[in-house]
Length: 499
Image (cartoon, rainbow, N blue to C red; front, side, top):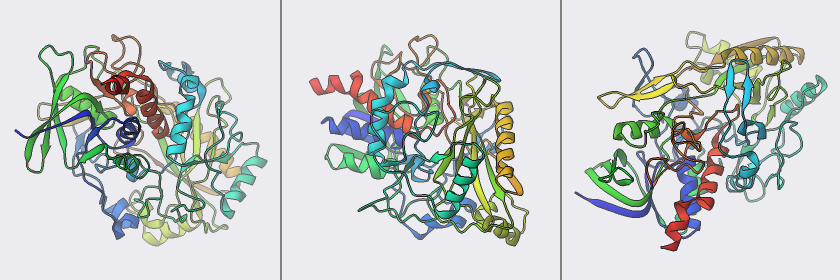
């Protein structure tokens, strides 16, 4: 059987895998990346709402099953760069409080095995790598910073600037969204309307491929094998380490061996692969505590104000993030990219297109985001046929409905006449996390604070799976910062450098 080798084998090329590869190669360590997908083509459909939102051109044909055994098409994208190829490039830091224990209306969010202060330098490194634009000091909930943002906040267009003033007059503290965009002198970004949820034809969106992986490839120390689906993690004879991985490629199966293995396939797929392989699960927690954020898209409508904006996603507010007024946190509200009538058709399937076009021309759209608390019964399972089952009853819906009520009240006060809501369903599994919980105790966690398996000497899991809690903010920057921290501080790189 064909065999490939490398000092470090990384499974997955998204935010976790791509950033880990970048950090390792900068330290002179050779890396082999196994990506189950291929390079995403640069084509007209990259900017087509019909192709992406209705035809779902870039979704895999894989089907998962829900708690009732019903099939659904998950919102995952198997390409070099992973889900970041189509994400919205919102890259905020978690708040300092998110790293500690927090009491919520419906339960408790557990503490992480490290603090915000431990993490802060790597947040800045990740912001620099992913070209994050924002302005410090505007959000009253933000943690302390060692340095300003690496890039100035994206300017608001006239419509959003008017919104900012309206919200400020109502007592809110709106601030510039933290966006990963190659904007500014010499930058590739043209501030188009096809960013959030689209593929960037110009490589101007800060995805894992364009920011991290391509930089790693410049060192000559990284190889990427595409269409390489890892079928199994095979342990050594005493089960103390991974001996090799079995890979399915276009020409059949082959073996890949490394000194270290980094599993970065996303919280669901990483856990599923560990379960299929029967490794790293002495705690019984692999796949458990699965979380996604409790999200709703809302479209706020004013028939007397036409929205002529191009790049809408530049404003957020966190006024009720830490305390909604009753002693417990609520969550975040962020503008999203401008939605068109055709995009609305993917959800409002029975509504005539001309009505949707009129609504879209007079609406502005937000995501309302609250924390989904971890619960061991919310989990990923794999059946005898290798199919992934997602059992999920999100914990925190009362909090979400309260945040929606509070946000709608302020939006109506700011002049909007109607508010339409699209709740996220199980297929919109963005921000997946929690399936290989990090912690100090091997009995109550799967990996340690540096994402190394408690059970296996040479396996690291660096994606959203390590999150002990979900917080209520976009997770991508935290995944990237942890990848940088793991490489800088753990034995993943240091022992290899000695050799």
